[in-house]
Image 1 (cartoon, chains in turn red, orange):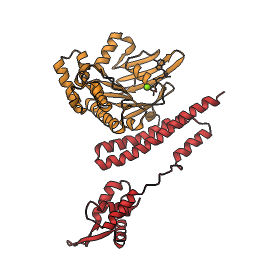
Image 2 (cartoon, helix red, strand yellow; image 1 turned 180 degrees about the vertical axis):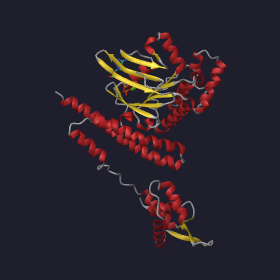
Image 3 (cartoon, each protein chain N blue to C red; image 1 turned 135 degrees about the horizontal axis):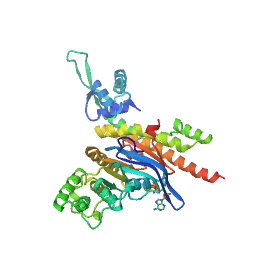
Length: 174
Length: 228
Ligand SMILES: Nc1ncnc2c1ncn2[C@@H]1O[C@H](COP(=O)(O)OP(=O)(O)OP(=O)(O)O)[C@@H](O)[C@H]1O
Ligand SMILES: [Mg+2]
């Protein structure tokens, strides 16, 4: 993920301090991997140098001085261009799940068993996400839905594979 | 052979249609207030299992025990009385009565149980409010969207405070957002009222609203949560 573009995008709704930006980022996008302060300040000084943000004010109420950043016109254009650029679809061709299923098939094991136990395992996580979604705010709902649909896709592929396999077995069975 | 504390339990169910075996030794149980998802490939016997559990069809062999009583020892009249008083049903397509209005449809289970019209419709409206369809009280099913009809069907399934709701693909005809809303309302209402739900679905996101999942394959059930 482009941290620079994400921080820029967060600035579009109004100027913020560095620590405020970090908090907004962690809340929406950093569920499992919060940003380090160092990352934020390094990113902001790069954006500053490239003219995508400007310093909107400096506060020094006793403690260390805190810069408030604002996005520039060039920054807004940069965010718009980033959003308009389609993401490369992730190919998902290296997953362990895929490898296991293919190996199970190659060695004559039952794909249905694999499906049933994997589904239970997937559902365990899906229940947690569903619960979090139910209690959470819009940001929680969006992130949990994203994960839930991907987990469901794994299972649908497994289901299809196991159904295909059943047919295949019928065809080759004597 | 009823698991301790279960409300409804089946043991060793067999059911054949001609030479076609739909259930082949299926066992299942659900506790009061528990939501159990039943999953498995098409034709594996999920609907047949659900119909046996609800006493709609009689298995060739095996037992279904509800509240300590075996369904096979009851008369047909007793079984249909039990379905009216203790069970609620939601199917893939609402199956509302087309000639009746929304509120009349939802009030129907209460009316069949002998509740007076005013009282029945008052309770029906309360459930319709919970399922966010109280505005459609005077509308007939033909004038409702699929999602609205399905919420109406959920209200009808819950209106008589059943002990068990049987739901066979309740979100099958809905889009993701409506399906999610129906599941939220169904499971939340069921949990609040302590109603058990037997939920047949092929969608994992729908099954994720359950407390436990069971896989049906070739007419048998596998409970993987306990197998681990
Ligand atoms: N009334 C019936 N007459 C004859 N065969 C039936 C009848 N009902 C079900 N079967 C057969 O029993 C088997 C199990 O059917 P069932 O409807 O229980 O499957 P299911 O798991 O609910 O499938 P689906 O996911 O497609 O709804 C199938 O082979 C089906 O053809
Ligand atoms: Mg079915």
